[in-house]
Length: 98
Image (cartoon, rainbow, N blue to C red):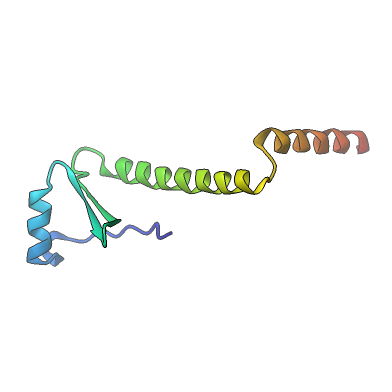
């Protein structure tokens, strides 16, 4: 997953891309390749566009984490409760040893 975001000045954007920027200003567009979403164009103009970018990055990370959890659940790995129980047991053992 590429989480690098680059700021590109309007002057460096092609005429076609500028047209898309103007067309979807105030909203957004999902670009597809063979019907599969591959790119999101989203208007982030306003007082704090960095907050929107950070929220998107967090949302992508959360989605990746949830996907990993689902795969683990399907494969029969430990549940959150089992993991917490193991951590608690290890902490109790460490306290006994000290």
